Amino acid sequence: MTTFVQLHLLTFVPPANLNRDDTGAPKTAIVGGDIRLRLSSQSLKRAWRTSDVFAKRVGGRGALGIRTARIGEIARKGLIDRGIETASALAIAKTLSAIFGKPDTKPRDGEERALTSQLAFVAPDEIVALEMMLDNLAADASFRNELSSVAGEIEDEDGLEEGGTKKKKKGLSKKRLNELRSRILVTSATAVDIAMFGRMFADSPLFNREAAVQVAHALTTHRVEIEDDFYTAVDDLNTRDENVGAGFVGEAGFGSGVFYLYLCIDTDLLTANLGGDRDLARAAVAALVEAAATVAPNGKQASFASRVRASYVLAEKGTDQPRTLAAAFVPSVKPGNALAESIDRLTNLRAGFAAAYGPGDTTAIAMNVTDPATKSLADVVAFACDWGA
Image (cartoon, rainbow, N blue to C red):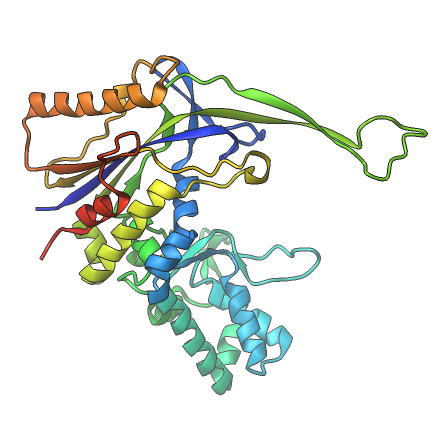
């Protein structure tokens, strides 16, 4: 049976704007009829996987991927470095970019580039395989001519001719494109972040990866009012002889609160995604637990210095069906000692679930910085990583 590791974290964030919406205001959600501050799961995952924690725990193994639309630009530069003429390198790079997604043919700043329309999550082994293909291209003129002649155009049905017959757009055949993909893309993720958070190639689902880690949006446990900071900047060279006003004025939204975050790790799927490398899977879990407790999105850090760490971490481990404890915060926690009440609500609901559904086989460990006798983060990490043979 699958072993799940579940994390429940409570983190106090002082006035901040860690994750903004399209208007620049802190993101929110309505829960239980009240407005709560929200940190999107996307912002959390990116903060974690690009953190020093991940680099230290798993980066040294060469096990972190790259998410980019510029993989074709890597190929173009590599071809030029190998002595391929600039125009030919661009045409070939456009074709190679189709391996990772639909090519984006729109010029940027008046210059043509080898980009994809979507971001591609690329594993270290795939970068190595791409470099090997660039070596092959540099040594094989017929291979170069084949890829440069189509310049990213992929054969496809392109409407109907008179009489209802189908016509096709000329370009690299899909069969040939899939052959090239099979030389570069891998079905077993060598990148920890891809194995954890998944990836999707719309045109080549064989190389998709189901996420082994599910991350909820973090929400405050209580109602929050978004405030606006009206600020000014002074022109240091303004002598005030003609203009006594500010050099710049602006507004910035912010909010503060205790956030509840839930995430669930399918350890069997994580191990499978990493090709059965259980040691790397354990290192990945350790990185995730430490990062979730110590790393937050860094929006507006220079303005608010909202460097935070979790005050409470509950880790659960077992084969029981996972469940969030977010229901503990409907209705909202009352103003006042929100952290202490949030901890009480969380532990009480967990006990309530155990009484209603039975204790099951899930075990748990908690770190509480308000308790002098608390377990340490190192204890929580060790607990979360102790599964399987």
